[in-house]
Amino acid sequence: MSALVRSVGIAAPVALAAATAAFWHHAPPRPAMHAKIVESAPAIPRQYLALVALTEQADPAVEGDSIEGDRAREENQRLGFAGGAISAAKPFRALAMAEEDHERALQCLTQAIYYEAAREPESGQRAVAQVVLNRVRHPAFAKTVCGVVYQRFDASVCQFSFVCDGSLARHPLPDLWSRAKRIAADALNGRVEKDVGTATHYHADYVFPRWAPHLAKLAQIGAHIFYRWPGGWGLPGAFTGRYAGGEHIPAFDPTRFVAAPQPIIDYPPVAALPERRAANDVGGRMDPTKGWKLSLPDPSTSGGALSEMLARQQKAAPVTLAADNHHIQGVQP
Image (cartoon, rainbow, N blue to C red):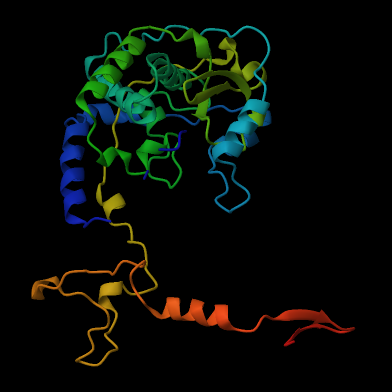
């Protein structure tokens, strides 16, 4: 969805990530809950199969193919909004009576809001929550909140980038986390963000994904632009999916991120370069441990080589230029 990553030793990140992993996940689900985790394959109409596949792929990383930065903002502005009124989604209250599922769903939805939109306005955070819950009820996606948030968590490209780009190794800021959790709780209790309607996709305005022109652009809130599926598949009548229950948070493996190879430097550090000078050659270096101090003479009072050169130039005979048929040459008079 959004684009959020960004050299230190490995030991510290491992310790931090391990502590963070303990913070994120509750005790493993009871055996009886595992039966609910398996979700049936979504029924995707044939005309939408290629479009669904397109939205699950990463944009080309080859220079010249991807559109980012100012150019992306220009393309986003050129892409018009879909006409007509925005149809609001129905309130989501499927978890009202499910205590264990509710706690896990609250955790996953809070993570999505925080890592995707912690610095966005509150309306933008509610819009992110609305997209997650819209997906739960749409046939193209998983039928649990955590299933939607962690879709393709073990792949190189996730539906929500924070799940697989290492963001989870960063401990959240308490105040921003509390706000995200409050907004997640409101959404799970039925609050609807009407400004994004039945949106199932969004992206930051500094990228222009290949799928953007193929979906219906609904609104921009803060730095995020929201879309729904085109045609009837993006209208309220298509949201027929039923919440499955059995919320499950996949195990977070911190070593997946801290074990990434360090950048390769193809030249040695300056301090490691061998000395190529005689033993008694100071080489212009100043050694302050010997009491040396930097002292430069005032140019106006120094009689250096520059002054001598200027004096010789003033006494030299003038040079004139003469042109012949082939070249210009200096001629002494």
